[in-house]
Length: 346
Image 1 (spheres, rainbow, N blue to C red):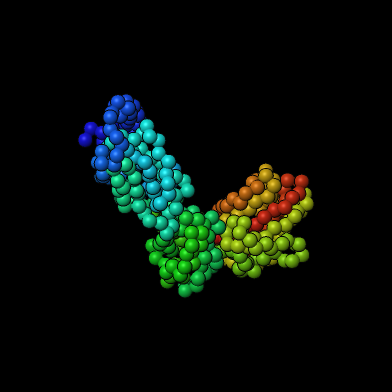
Image 2: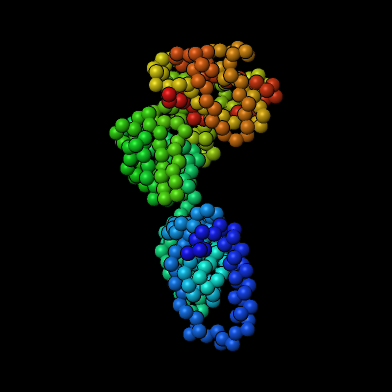
């Protein structure tokens, strides 16, 4: 069919011109507009209106335009995706094709998974799934240091009928909503990244199971002592999980962790952490007691959570972890936030 080989922009122009001609002919017709004057609509295929790709599909996404092909569309009155009345431009309708954009508010959970066209000649229903956006992992998963059989909560969005894997190992889904999934850590999941897959795509965690020094609690004895006057807060604004800590630090003030020891770091390439503070402010990572202005990393922060990575080479070729502290390095002070501290896998 010639139309299949046209570029989308040319197809659009073609149908606009054709609709004008058809409209002119219709205005001269003596048709009485009764339903018997129109053939029943038939849908042969639906494809995304994307230049260079007109492959038929039965899955679509909100805010994307699709071409419905068939016949009997000239008297089109209504378009429904999942029972949602969807606007269409009459100038992009001919007897054999309809260009229509799926409304952004079209439901995708507990929906009919149907496309319905209503014309003066009748109604036609066609199987068509409106899929959610690709899944998002907004606050990661928790606890990070879970053991086999422990329940882990994954926080994010668009978790419709998810499949969860740790590396290549599929996990049992205990429960899920669009924003949270509870799974059991399967055998062999330690040191594996977590992936959530839906009909719309996949998302993988930026850190692996069993790599936390702080997820919502501290591990290994590195927690800052209470005399630091820092505060723990639990809510849905954490970078990971539900709990983070913060300190209102004056210029050049500091937050000092406890002294401990971990030299079992052969599997790791360095450490990671999520931080935020006043926009453009600076904080120094004081690792293993390195307070030097010349060799200690100085981090420029934003007002939103951001994950930072430091290799052992960045940390004077460290072969162990003994202490993690921070110093305000802007000189102006402010409230600084800390979360999701742990190891980077090699």
